[in-house]
Length: 565
Ligand code: AHR
Picture 1 (cartoon, rainbow, N blue to C red):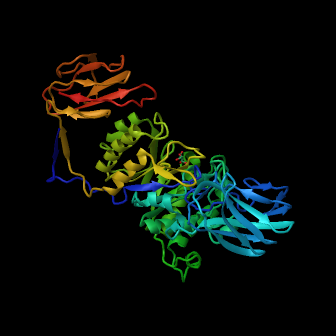
Picture 2 (picture 1 turned 90 degrees about the vertical axis):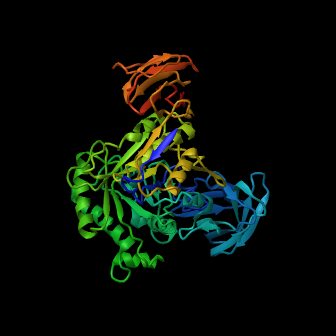
Picture 3 (picture 1 turned 45 degrees about the vertical axis):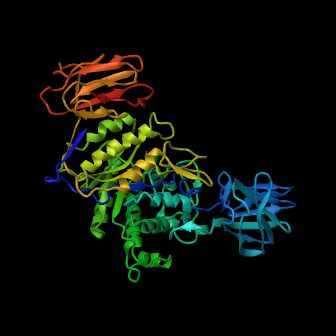
C-alpha cells in the first residue's frame, strides 16, 4: 500500500470539540453506576422494594420512613449486590429512633464490617475486612419499634468534585472527551411530561431531591443532578452540553399557553450555570451549592428526538428566548423526521443506530454535504445490529464512520457514541461503551475506538491517497478497500455478496482475473463460504479505485478478507 499525504494543501481544521460523550440515565448508568450510592430505594418512595425484613421483623413504609417492628432487622442488597473492597472505607448515614447495629455481610453470612449507630441522625464508618462483590447491609435495631429515614452508604474513595464512582469515572476520563452531553436521551423527555428531567429538583440536599421515574423502567434518586453534571464536566475539562426538555414527552406535550414556564426553566438553567454569584438569583444558588465560579455552559440542545409541528412551534420559542438572553449559546436542534423551520438552525443533532455495513458505507456521508447549511452534531451513533453485546466489527464500522466525520469536521463539529454505560444487571439498551457491575467495569471494543480517536486528535485534515500496488497483500477485514488498477482478486466468506467498483455494481464470479471496464448492471449472488471470486469492473485507466463488498447474512455482521495481487 502506498499512502500519499499532501501537506501542501491542508483541508479543514478538525473541530476542537469533535469527540465527546453522551451520558444518559439509562441501564442504571447513574443510579447503581456512576453515582456511587450503594443503597437502592434509599428514600423508601418505592415502599419496601429492595429492603427485606428478617428474623421475625415486620417492615412498613409511609412517606420517606420505614418502620420496623421486632425482633430481627432489615437488610438490602443495594443494586444487585453491594460491591466491597478490602480496606476501603464506606460511610453509613442514617436517621433512626433507636440505636442500630449495622453489618456488611457476604452471601455466605460472613460479617465483613460492623459498627453501631446511636439514635438520631448519625454517620459511621464501615471498613470491610475482605473484598466481596455481592454483600448486603443488615440493620439490627436494639429496640422496637424503630423508624428509619435517609439511609445512605457511600464509598469514601471517589473521583473528582462530583464524587463519582472511581473506576467508572476513570474509564471516562481516559476517553478525554471534549464535551459531555447530559442527561440523555429519552430520559430528558420522560414517558409523560411529569417524568421529564426537572433540573431544579436535582439541586441541594440529596435527601430532598425526590427522584425521577425514568423512562427506562426505574426510579432514580437525582443524586447525580444538574450541579454534579456540571462538576463532572469541570473535572473532565469538557464543555457541558445540556439537553433541555422542550415541553414534549413521549406521550404528551406542554400546551403552548404554558410554555413560559418551560422557557424560564431553560433560561434559569443557563443562569445557574453561568450567572454572577453576587447579582443573579441562580448564580447565587450555584455559589451556595459550593461553586461560585461560573461553569461556562455554552451548548444547549432544544429537546431530544422531538419533531413534527409541535416541535416546530416550541423550538422557535426556546431558540428565540435563549439567543436573546444568552447570545453566546450555541443551540442544537433535533432532526426527527425533519428539521424545524420556525427559527434558524445552528447545529443539528443526527442519530444513527445500524449495522456495521451501514457505518462502513456512511464513511463518505459528509464528503458531499452542503457546506452552506448548518453544522452537524452526530449526537448518538453506534452499531446496534449484528454485534452481540459489542464486538470488533461493530467498533470497526464506527471507526470507519469516524474517519469520515474527521475528514469533514468543518461540517461535523461534534459526535458522541451512545449510550455510554450499562449495568450488566439492567441492560435496557444494547450495546453500550462501558459495561459494569457492582465492582468491575470494562470497555467494549467500541469504547476503545472512542478512546483511540479522542486521544489521538489531528489538527487539520490533509488530502490523502491510498494506492494498492500489485502484490500488496492482505487488506484485512473490511468492507471497503481502495486499490490500484491491476489484477484484482479477493476472497470472502460472506454468503451473500454485492460488489461495486467505484460505486458501480459489477459482476462477481468465482476465480481470478484482471480488472476490466465494467458493463452497467447490478449483481447479487449466493455462494458457498470460502470461495474465491473475481470482479470485473472499474476504469482500467484510473490510477486507483474503490472496491466495496456488502454482506447480507446473519444481519450483515460478517467480516471480509480482501486481497489484492
Ligand atoms: O441511546 C439510547 C436512546 O436512543 C436515547 O435515549 C434516545 O435518544 C435514542 O432513541
